[in-house]
Image (cartoon, rainbow, N blue to C red; front, side, top):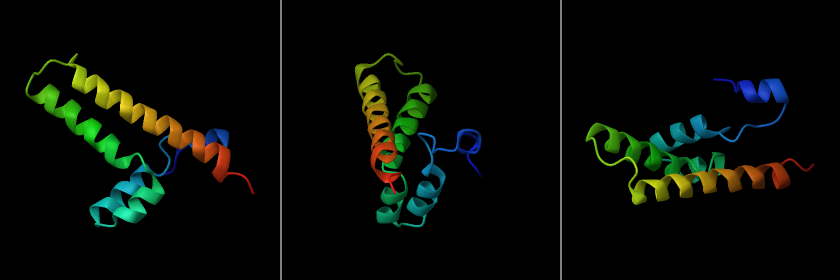
Length: 90
């Protein structure tokens, strides 16, 4: 599925590569998955933690959940920053 952000602004969005990375991960190609979008595994862990918390009606303000969200956001931010600063220089 094409990225509407990239279509509108001409640059990758912070999530560009996630779909291809998940597909590579499902095929068992961990190296390609990481190359396509390094935050895939932390993001999937974040989704699973959120779903588990919601499904079992656990404390949604738990410190562990906040840490998972923060670390994932941090990883996404720095991956995007790296991509914008170093991989688009030609």
